[in-house]
Length: 414
Image (spheres, helix red, strand yellow):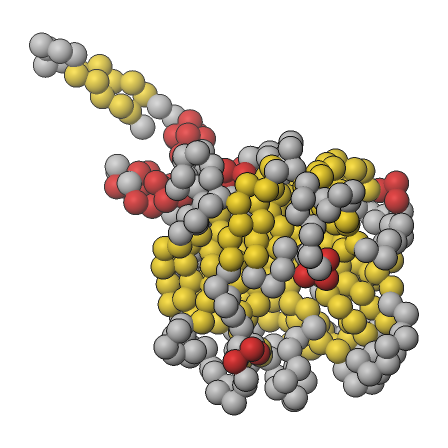
């Protein structure tokens, strides 16, 4: 590739050769929106690079690693049910980077996309009609609606690629029962994206099912997890080929009607390649007034403990997994951040609190059913609040140009 420079007053041109490798290195540092709206028009070669699978995956890997220290790499979408027609779902971008002063007050949204294939169960009462978020992967966000809890949506806000799974026939026949846990992962060998659902059975087991996007026509049932019931699912994260759910489990099929059942804090691990589960008991010191959730931070698994601090403050402790092979050991988790948010815990119920984003600059925390708080890591100061529209949800993600068809190691599939 060459860049020509015309000297003033002369017809002769000075040509500067630039290798393709240098061009790729420069382009992958450019925001996705600039690539798709402007730079793809420079020349055919740049357009070919931008839309190739190898470039898309190298860019997202660069951004995921960088996002561990920079909140500027993160974006978010807000997903809501249409006001006039609950058969449609509106996906909007949350414009939290539009203010150069980094103010998180009065955040605006911009509509991106409207789905047209959500099957509505009109007999559901209004409080039950809401959008539920799943973990993001490589720029794809995943969500499902309680109006049709047997189908799941996968969407890239940058490229607008959108896929809806077929109906999951392995879920319970009682339409009032939502899936107990959902996760989105990618196989690091085949680069196939998979939606995994965990559902409780009446016989006291966890029944998993899986759908591989672009390969499966129907959902597949996986081996049941015996002697366990999901009593409560806190959060889900995907890190390096493994899906993690932080949950409370019990061994009784009647936990919903028995209030004295003892629960165990468990990390459910799912190897996306092998399609195998592992149950790990996390032995952190348990306090009566605390909530534990997990998150991904720069390609690493984090465990976040949120509890009440002194004088109505909120204490947030972030532990990073340094030994992924022995997560049950306390020595495998190293404390990386401690943040004290002053005067925020007054009338705050911890059961609704969980982590959404962990970076070295800003923490984003769900404070109640609708309120999302932005906290400065250095000072603990609340920078702003955003209230998600009723029945909706907010999903953070790292923007990418990755397409479901991309295979970065195979030039012919790019």
